[in-house]
Length: 497
Image (cartoon, rainbow, N blue to C red; front, side, top):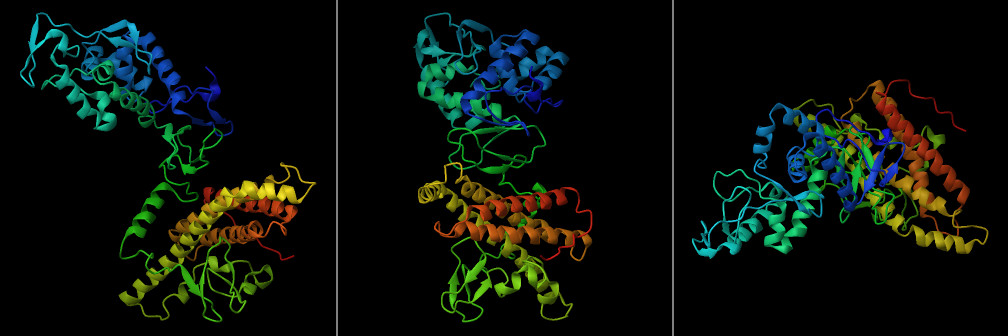
């Protein structure tokens, strides 16, 4: 077995060996798989377990499904009490029929009992029917095929749990073999087989379905992996998500903090959706302005006044020569309440103002990220146009535009969740000061990169875009790394050029 793909989980919550035909990120051992690629993995696991416990392959497949497709968990319980575990799974009466194999798992079929006599009375409809019109699981409880078919049709509507369907007779624990679904209703076969394959993913903590809409890929990663991306295969969506919780990638915020934040935002008493409008008034001429791009550098078309969409301050105050770029990322508690009253109402207003400060910036970066994603959809067209405008540029030379937008999307996502992280970080501490410094620097270069990607193609310059993309990526890495290291250290001194 190739050691590079060997993942062991003592509790049986991981796949022990990964196939090498999936798209793999060698650095993080993350794989992107198609559903069809799971079938060989399932068959291999059935063969390996069957060689050890010496049970028919059809019974091994059922036992693995019952124990979350974990060899370790199955072995541990099987050797404690072999008879009990097969009875509990409802396969103690199963006998294999090697003359035919299951098309999904490759396991042998189950021998079904044959009735003795000419007629059988169905316990459901009470009709006396010829023996060939009845059917039974290995337990020998015969029903007419129509009633059994209706029973399985109802079970298939229950979803994935249908793979553990037992005999319809009350008190009987025998599991209905997979072949009975296809033999009674051909249209049930596809759904049942899909649930079998899905169980291989759903029961395994080292696999996740890509949560993006209309994406059917599976991402496999070692336990403990955080952010993963669905990429590298045809029809991959390039969606980046948290492997632990399945939500959108949310570094530097932990999964528990994210749940707290989402719960807070859904609370009607604190939600800011009705407070935040889609438009703001120009600070100078009071003209209503709608923000329809990602950059926070706004210019009023009426009076030409340039200001920051976040803090509504003059854009001229946001340069490095004014004492630091993008200081409006920091929350000022002294400017929130407008008084020094310590009453409950005043404290509540301060807390709401603090929440709105972080929520507004969280929301703004989310909207800017969506705009950048829309830009990405048109990137290839812009790259072709840019290549046509410059005869000296090859297709490789214009890749900088795509790379810049990918970096911009990643930085917007990280900045979006830094405001969740900052909300739960104690104010007026050295850690908060260091965090806001890194956040400020990333804000600065993200805005610069955003402006560069939005300029007209006739004015775009390759070198500044490439350089800003690289520098922005460095500041993103520094911010995330600093948080992972516990925000230890002093605030770096920034020397203006």
